[in-house]
Amino acid sequence: QVQLVESGGGLVQPGGSLRLSCATSGFTFTDYIMAWYRQAPGKEREMVVVITMTGASIATTDSVKGRFTGSRDNAKNTVYLQMNILKPDDTGVYYCAARPWSTVQYDYWGQGIQVTVSS
Image 1: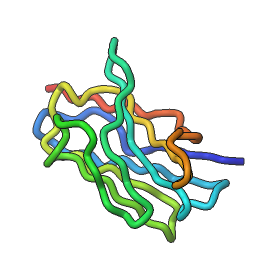
Image 2: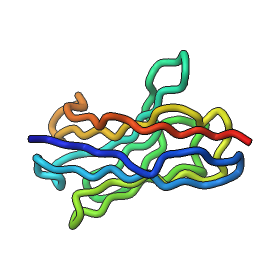
Image 3: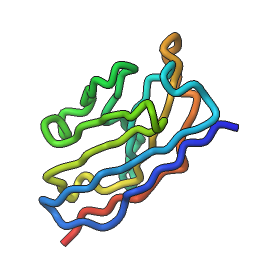
Image 4: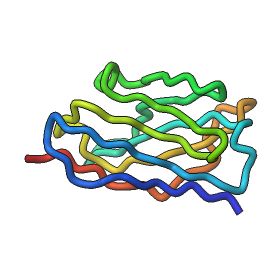
């Protein structure tokens, strides 16, 4: 049974930091490209960071470049999202997702976790 479980969300003040974790099981983690998505209230879900199988982090949204970094620990089957200099516009539900290297569709998704940036 495939599981992706996010943790580490919550309320943070503007300018603060959070680190999200996504613990996975039920698939061969090292064969999967991982990504973080987010969905703000009233907006479509957007991809923010991709983490390649070799651990490279690629920001896919201009607004997070230089502030958000993805990483993975293959020994723990876990992926992370370090978010710095958080802004109110970063508020939303954050999801981790996984796809095999050979496909373009993200097959597996976490349940999502709320991040709120507010003073």
